[in-house]
Length: 254
Image 1: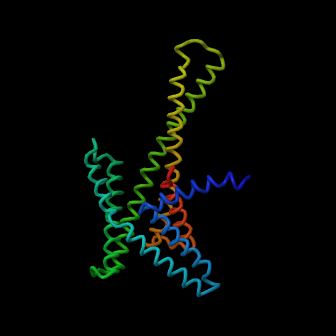
Image 2: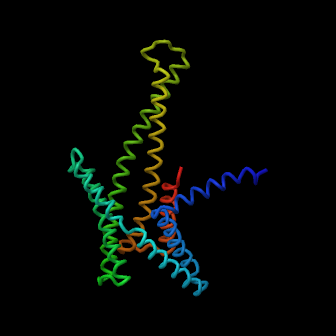
Image 3: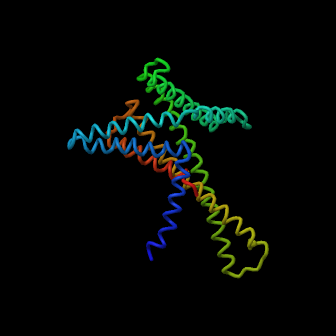
């Protein structure tokens, strides 16, 4: 009986996985899981088996190289986002400036990433060490600005949640007291609209929590690459896995 019930769920999972892997960004997330999973396992095997350390290192390098191919063209998407920021009503507002720094950081992160790929395959000749450092700097500032923007949005969402929760509670109290004053009792339609708005706020809040966890994990990796703080290989592996799984979850077909 359990097998019969679980079969549709398995088929649905398989269909969603196929849809995820049909996207280059979906393949990138799977490759990222392999890359940082290999880094973590390499750290675990460090004092146990040199053979498996070498195997994990090769898997990490191969997965990282594959990701560079799948990220080709990401600069075009960032260009569109940057241009859109100049079309907003007040482009030089504080949050818009942060958004511009974020998108510019990600744009140059992809540019340097493409140049590293070009150098690795022999299309051009650049110092990949310097390019890697420039790429990490761009990534670091892009992530930092993303977290600041998300925290600001989170503060707004928490205020809205509190206000809507109080309104819903007050409406329930009024209804329970059988108060028939039409000026104090919100209609069913208005009640439903408030509840729908409350649910949207909760959904948005949860998305921000996930974004902060994902970007915070990536920030640990960027900080280590820039030698701001020397996190261990194991910590880097765990951070990359967390970021990749959250990214895959957010992309997972609903």
